[in-house]
Length: 617
Ligand code: ADP
Ligand code: MG
Image 1 (cartoon, helix red, strand yellow):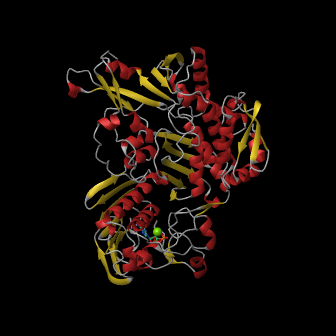
Image 2: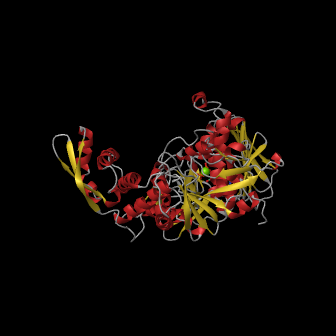
Image 3: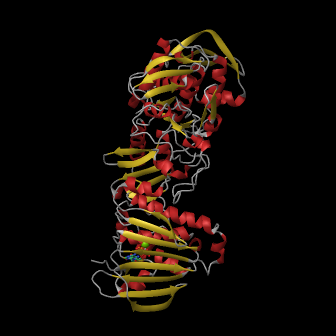
């Protein structure tokens, strides 16, 4: 049955967060899609022409609006979704303010055609700049279509704030992509200037919706997130080896609503701590389901923000869920691929699926005398054309193009998936070679040792990011035979004073030794062989964190100590040492990347080697 529309009493209207609902074409698309979803639609079709300024049309197969209610639908504060102030705390629909159609109708020519399921005729209502132009019966299938033309024709100031039609179109596609992700059971299509830009199947799974909205190479890098409880967390987030330059790639959904919430985003990013380079960000979707009574959706005019009654619990759940998922991250993998185009000359391509700033440096590697050139597929292949739509986040210029030749690994499951790692030896005092049931594993000993020390330090310091109960000796304090005296400037001294207790708890013993001098008599045992004076200076600089959370400070100090203490590339290791390092690496959470986000291991899959050496699989 169709709910009737009514005007909200003034006290309810006044309790609604006021502000501009329609900022740009994408806000129109979002509001109209939300109305379709609230009407129980299973299919929503969106057309956007000329960046949305020429025409936006959203049609659905939902409940429809009774002909007599059409004029009310475009009246301000008229809604069928809430009736009293308390309803604002139990909102289950996406809309509730009764403002969207009125606001859009005020700045465009808006035409609604609608037919309820139990009526055999449709009705049409046309409004221009809030003035009624036409009201008439018409023929249409059950459902609603809203067409918006000449958006902002009477508000030139608003027009001036818009970006290029292309950018506005992209924002519209993104809005529909967000809808598809938050409502995987609904089939969405968006056509831009007549061309389909995105189509979701509506099959009901988040994975299907993700496949429809993400570039294939990004989709291939997702790990599932699942945590049940009073706060349920689902989703799919990027492997630590895949990351992007901006924060815009992480879509947060709370109770089917796409929201922007800095703290929630920080909770996701916290789960990646020690896994990503400092300036890079993960992408994906995190869906939080929680009792609607504990979420306030009435805080922002476009409903893009929400407030939680118990923020801490929600953030902890999100952080825990993502962290658990990331324990299953898979190592960077390399593929060998014969290039048929080179005929008889054996030519192999080495593709390193490791996304990051350093990959260009490793692009080409020639093996002398073998007639084999190893190249990164990322540079060997011309970029593929942009997939249907890059709905999530700004297209990432640094991400390598999807490679047709590279088959992604099967289900990601952490370093453990490689099975028993047996140390075989070391190449040029640098790379370790290990034997695995999956193939040949190459290890960067410095990165691996860094990760091991980092995880063990955090465990010793009692941080959630560490290996519980496997702290090792590295975290305890080690007295220095010769104390180090460090000269500090005033800010360094001030930071030391602010964090003296914390520094002590990390295993450093520092004391003032004169006006601008500190004396260091002990360091964390892991760092016993490091240059104490240099370490202390960097420690003092690392402490400059303002009011960042203590866990972040701990992460930074652990990463710093690990970096100073780990074996160097070029240090020879005997086989027993190599094996010990491998065993500790497998035990370290998130062992596939070092605390700065560099990969620790590369896998040359047996299957790829067989192909390259023309051996039957
Ligand atoms: P709100 O969604 O906050 O109620 P709107 O201005 O977006 O306010 O819509 C006003 C009313 O018009 C809605 O409450 C709903 O009853 C009706 N309506 C709008 N769009 C649709 C649609 N696509 N299908 C059915 N009813 C709709
Ligand atoms: Mg609405």
